Image 1 (tube, one colour):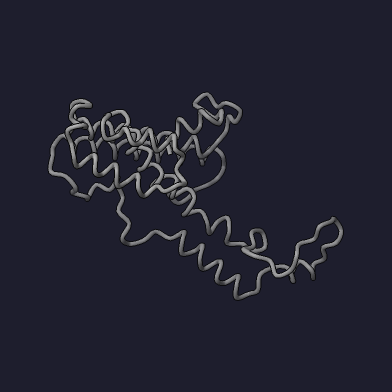
Image 2 (cartoon, rainbow, N blue to C red):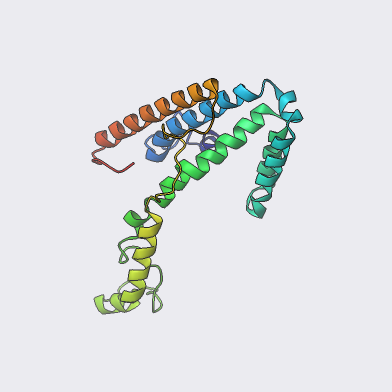
Length: 219
């Protein structure tokens, strides 16, 4: 998910477009920029130009393996663009930034908020036991309760979204300072700058939420 490209396609770019206030965009863009800058700095440690990408047979195998896992859900246009990551530093940066952003920021926004949005089964039932009304005035309190999932199904549903909203003890955080993934001064310095950008983005997001009167939120 290339966030700037997606927002531009929907008319929701940096200038606000048709939606001047868009909390996800406002909070996610600094995170995208932090990820993208880190990826660019990291790649520059190992690759000087496109020729280095072409010469890296392990990179070609990685890109091929990664694309094979996307399946038919990935549009052909994107697959073709990502396939160039094996021969182009710019395409490789786009692929890695988009992938990291998708499995971190986008996943967190969708996953860790499920209990908040789906924990009240009266507002977001997982299923109904009878057909919903098709006209106004035909729904009573009794028929509404009869339509709602059974208590057992409600418990299962809430338990499921609670589990999906939890942080796992085995989660690996790219911004964690105690992860010793590489022994390279240039790469370590790039990661330190990345962590600094993440902290700045988090502080700015908290300030925006406070200004909107949302109070303190996890994350």
